[in-house]
Image 1 (cartoon, rainbow, N blue to C red):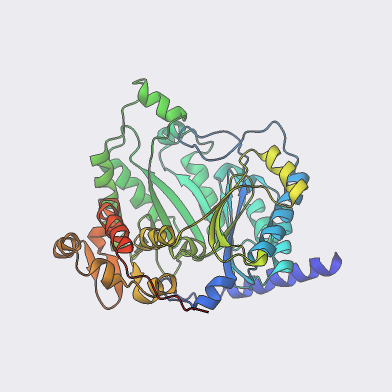
Image 2 (cartoon, rainbow, N blue to C red):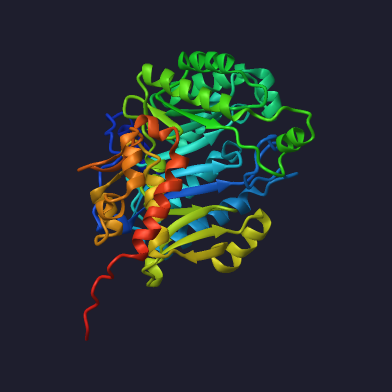
Length: 442
């Protein structure tokens, strides 16, 4: 055990050195099929929160007490099991989400990273992100997470208006959020992301833009804008249904989003994905895996994953969901080594639909080379080149199809959902009418 502690200590030291190196802007650079099949990202779900926010329907629980030792052991066990099952040889990023993972102890984070480093290659420059809420992440605690191996933080700020924060059920004030953000930037310079929500009930465009402008004085190099979605079963949904709160205005939300992206562009941020903005090369490595349909393993209650079970002789990409309820998940992990509740093999068409829908979320889009890694026979030109509807979208300046591949324009990213309603049926039709590749006889 002592040698493993030395090993993870060396990894943390090397990771800190790598953190100081210049970052490469690698979104959109293709990888070989061989490397893609042996690499993965790892998502770790910590399901517990101090309280449930009024808008949140994520898989989270407000426990009377947490047996963290048992949860830690099960996270480590499931990580080991799924890494072996997947046959993954290299983990390129780890993301601790939730829930509120900053409520977990740094020892739990270190234990998971140690298990990953023992099972597979975890390079020193791997991105290790922790989601943190201001009230559960004072500076000393953030520093301890850094010592445990975390090298990037995602701060759930959500708003700089105390009234809005109370409406959302957040436990922090705007002042708390800015103080945590300052501490995070001091400890993780250039590697702090912050979330800001838009489209809240009764929210005004001008007031929200003032929040964004204020945030620009305090934020680091990565910022995410998320529009509020009223989810059935949440307190906020019930209040709107009962008429206690006005329904969010979708037109005002669209205006906030459009104005916000312009403000961020003028401030030097690249909108590299529908909701994500970065400058100075601070793109998220972990999220890039999702958008490029790379493999990712989901660890913890309710976590989702997409990977090929190469370690078990599998050849088909599978969609996996772990058991939701923490106590039941832990029982399954202790019995079987993992708590996978649902495992669905994905058809070739379903994978291509994900490649298209996820890839078009980025400003790079879907390159020809990236598409060919998933479908070498049916090209992007075959699918979309002869489409009258696609030609109209190109003429409107919303979509580009050229020697690089298929991608949205800056204007097109803002209306991606409506574009996909046209593009996905085009893909489905082309797939049905494709010429099957010849099968060699024996």
